[in-house]
Image 1: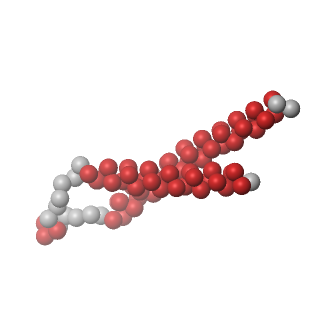
Image 2: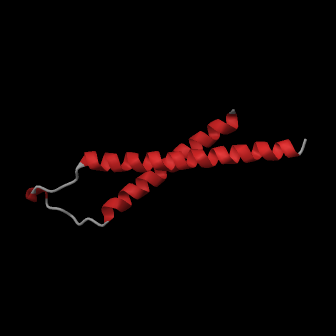
Image 3: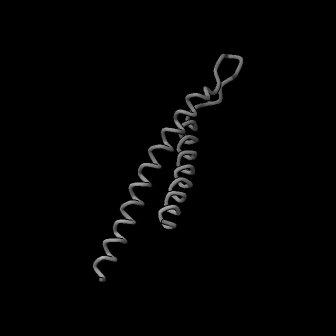
Length: 80
């Protein structure tokens, strides 16, 4: 159980890092906008993009963690 919890925390940490990086990369191509022109950052879009990247990367990492735990169990079964 300890190994599974560590894999979930590991996946959550790296999903957070990847989501933050991909969100920042998503906004790098946009130029600076003068606030007096009515432009600016729409924080709901930023949050939606961040949560989308976080959810996607968390699902991918958890699937990879399940494959890893499954392969450990499969290899452990062969040694018996």
